[in-house]
Length: 226
Ligand code: 5RP
Image (tube, rainbow, N blue to C red; front, side, top):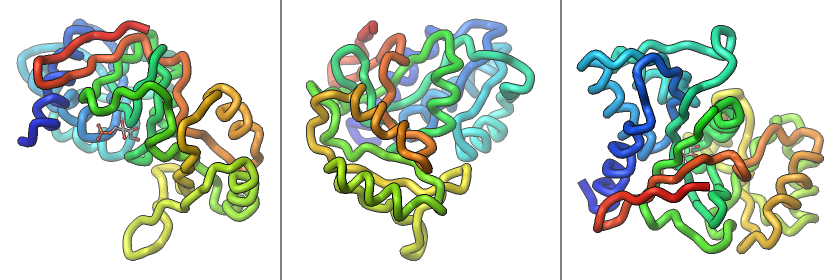
């Protein structure tokens, strides 16, 4: 394990303090959330009773392989807690997410969570969002007109590529433009502008959603409250 992996694992381990018997738990996506799902699997083997709502096919497969019972929003209205990673964490727990391409389901689960716990290594902490390219999920039919609008707003969009040079396809069959804004001065305004573009399904700005971030560095994990 690299030092960063150890930090991710430390943050993920601590996040389990937020999970109690009987809870519905949102299962995030990405390498840090994967540590958390593995730790949850261990707890389930030891007798913890939870039901999970995964935020991606990959997380669903992992949860199934660990015998974590799953549920869905057809059966429950919210998750008690969701544990997920982030690509950037700024003051106020403003986040960029979607580096792993799961931003749409992650945001659906995040908005239906009573408590969103973000797990991250301390390299994810930034003063301002935007060094990490902001993912924007777009319906393929709208890719060209949306790209034009993104260019006009100075987002420098790059279509994410998948296997063998073809576009990356999300779990919902959409494309992702990774947008290179540089430092984002007004994330709320950018979020609003993106949401107003027809054909944009979702973007990776998670503002006002996280309840707490568990951020780990070489000297251990610390908690940042919203
Ligand atoms: C996936 C995500 C991930 O949570 C984010 O990319 C962080 O991933 P990692 O823990 O692997 O650094 O938003 O869509």
